[in-house]
Length: 281
Image (cartoon, rainbow, N blue to C red; front, side, top):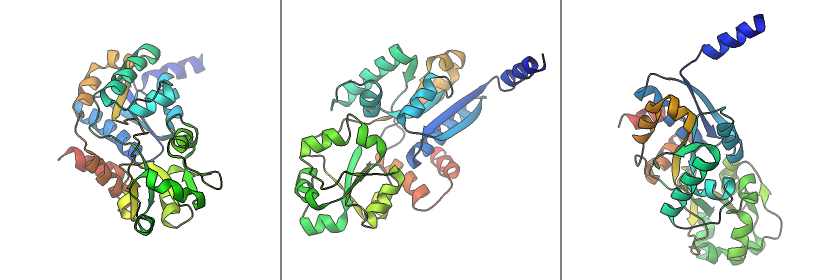
């Protein structure tokens, strides 16, 4: 009887609580905090933060299970890693495909894109760019015969990741790529522990550490527009959330996202303060 009473009390203690999640890298933590503050500012709902949860599959599973109500995903990631659909370079088509797929399969809604495309970026040191006169991934391909690559575990496994990239560009590393936490790859590259990494185009550490993004001259990577996903059940119960998230549509440029990432990673500013300052601009 006591256990039942405790369960009732627990379930009723936060009747209007919204749980916001994020993946486990800086940009995602910033975007999770952005959703949380936007909901707090525009509604009367309480927000619980479950940031830094893990990778794509972890956050997706949490959303489907109802452990979180919303998080920010990237269209190309959803297309290939979750829906297992063929890669496409058409941003509008990719968005409509994931929007329809998530609605039908998972009972979740893709809201308006935030305004920036965070594509995978193949990154090397500026000194190597200058020494070998490199601009594109095709330019760099011959050099991989004596380079060491370092990739996050998702990039190694994903349909739009290393296997297809290697085949498209003819990359021939002498050893299998080192698998490491995505956040550590930039420092490893700067410190010459590896020679080529796959990062994110909006990461602030690219400029801060003197690194350079190679042009994807064969257009291998699909678009990765960032957009909040929210459970249909949550929207039905709290339609004001949908309106709050709609206000964020188109509000973040790639330059602004890179600046926020650098404020946290390069200047070690507090995530909550960085988001607060962005929202009051």
